[in-house]
Image (tube, rainbow, N blue to C red; front, top):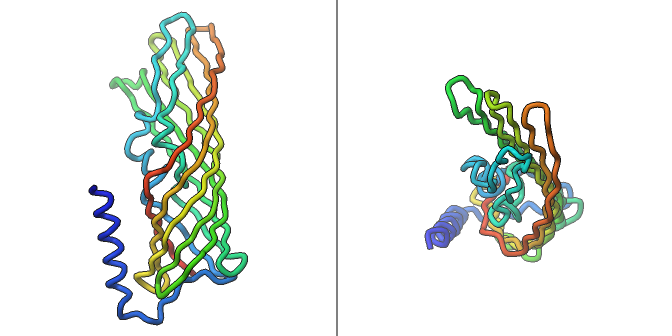
Length: 234
């Protein structure tokens, strides 16, 4: 309910800001371009805590390794946090994005026990505007996604280290609305429905002994939560 109210508030605010700005028109002609900054997506998930993305248990000394699965339902089907948009034709644009985060936690004062979590993602797709009006444009499109996640736990005193890696690809269809409160600034709000597949692998080391493992695959299909993107047109 809070998310719905927030969306309605933004719509009302955008509408009120453009009432007296009849000269504002959506910028979706050939050659138009913009920088994209996502407020809800992969980067937002990472900043809220990469540690929650990874599950599973550590090795028990028999080189079992870490074989957890990331919370893909909340990490997939979003565009990365920073990107760009370029209109190769009227109403048709190429879109791309990239996201990255690396978080390292030391569990003791000397830093001998550490956990490192990292995530990188890229996306590319097409965006097509199906209807435009004063300061408002409705669009649809599709997107390809690639992501990699890794978690490393190291204990120097016990001479143990475990690493779990995930690699995945996905595709998504999208529908959204673009609102222009100002001439060169707009906000996108969109939903996505898509499919993604991840594979896992890892390594567990005790002293001079190490063991590699390969896990199965994880697939995800569903509708993402809504996301908001700031566009700076230039």
